Image (spheres, rainbow, N blue to C red):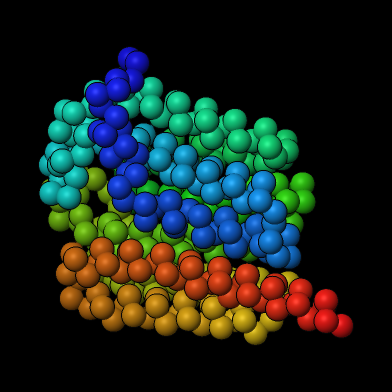
Length: 295
């Protein structure tokens, strides 16, 4: 079914344009990787391509997620007003919008190379199957982590036409980070999900949810430390990572009672974790460049 101009506002809400946190969480690892692969500013072309790609693919992911959940979102307190669940948008419109967003994102690949394009195919496939995983496995957050993390090898591929071992260290670090923060997100809906039979890591971990999250976050930090040591990054990188650790610790303390609003706030707080690490990376390479010019 063709898209309707009168439904433009509903389409934007279906894409979560009014809730950009998901885009931010996709963007930060892409920016880390662009700067790491380029050893500094990657250039405006790649920066614009990855910023636009993050927005488009996150939007497409939201659309296909709501399409998959159109018959269950109405039973969940947090999602019952979403456009598909409320009947504002028809399922065929959502599919059309998903295809359109994916095609626009694909057009950006013309500005990169074939290796990046191959990575993008895997990213789209993972994004498309993610919403259906919660029906068959308690690990949909792992699939989401894999989808969100594909920006990492794509950034390295677009920068140097290769995906070195360091890129995969960052990739698996981001997977751990995503699973951790999306478990906080799943804790918000846990009671509703149990009632309707939807699976998640929050349900799988049960009473050990926060302990599992901390374990994943420790692995995330350890892998990011390995990245810093492998690339011989300077003190500013580690300062950014340390600040991120303080934020992760704050999330743990603030969710002691597993209050829904606190768990959701902990999820949102990860935007600042990603920002802190990026600032550390960017400043480290900037300082390195300034010192090289002064020498």
